Image (cartoon, rainbow, N blue to C red; front, side, top):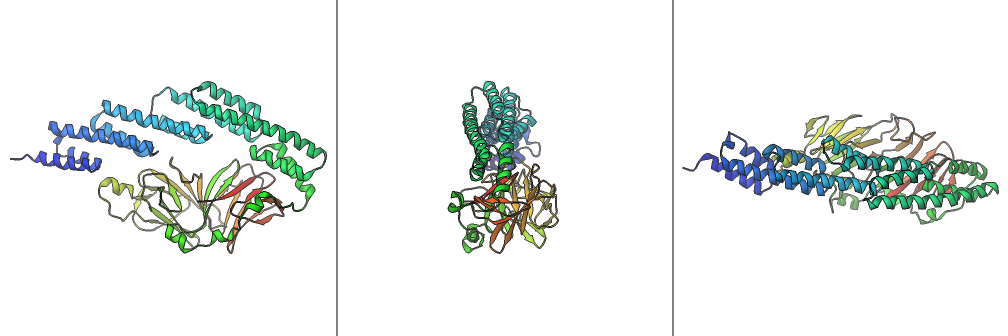
Length: 470
């Protein structure tokens, strides 16, 4: 008679072939089946497959899922040679991701990835040196922003000395030296322009320096003095001639709906603060970043292509779990499509409250904020290590206005600014408003001006720019 455990073995083998590893392991571990040697051997094969899947996921940057696979592999078969090889592959991929962040001069991102490895208790000698390099780069970046190039270069030289095997650091050092020379020449010319009261040249040189070092006190003071002396509009700049009207990009049309997006989007880059993906539609869709998958907020993660929508209703927002009620084969696929608010799974639309944290799939965590009492706009903060595509520090769901400034209740907190700056919508146009004069695309405006799809806005102690998406 064919033993019952052999049927279970066959069932687990089928699940393994189909890639349903968790299901296969659950079958093998039930009803004391592990007393049979073939069952143990099959569970070891499932563990090896989990290690291979972990390596594949780490290569795609899905590190949370990769670590979960490794944990399961260890649970099912222990620290076998195959497990150790898979673990090394994931660690190597994570280290390569750290190096890519360093090469992009993203020291904050590199430190976050290093901390994630440390929490996993990864014991590798290079981790401490990478952390020290990231801190040196972080210090150098802050010094460059203030135009203190000599000390910034010293920090970069120290980073190169710590890890001479990383040519990316030499490239960052080279670029810092080039920026230092450009800043030095521009500052010398700025002193001449100030001495001769050439205010047009002063503004041009100050902006050139601030492009390199946004926190340069000399350039900021010079620009403020020039504005007070000019007291009127400057001629059109090259930037202004090259831009396009904003109104066409604010219109919602059928093409947008066919592509799966809900309205106009743009990137808002705030110098020395960060980048923000601004969505203007009343409803946005969040989903997986995948070629051909057009959603408003694409996230590089193992989630569904159209996972949730967030819909603005009056002054509130509703989270709709688009993927939660779809039928997926296997427990892992079902977990991939789930949506949880503050740890509680939802399958129907739910009202979001300020401060709510919600999770998509396994590990993509976001926080909903509606901080400003006088604006219906909201902010989505990404709490996990996942990235949007294109990359942004947060997502702004812009209703009638978005407020930037030093107050904690602003949509974008800019701690070093003296006053607030407001982006607001009027019919199909976008405008910027401030308490004092500001320059928009090379033209001096008295506190208010219309924006285009590629506008550059400069104030006495701030600068920001817009960039279309796609």
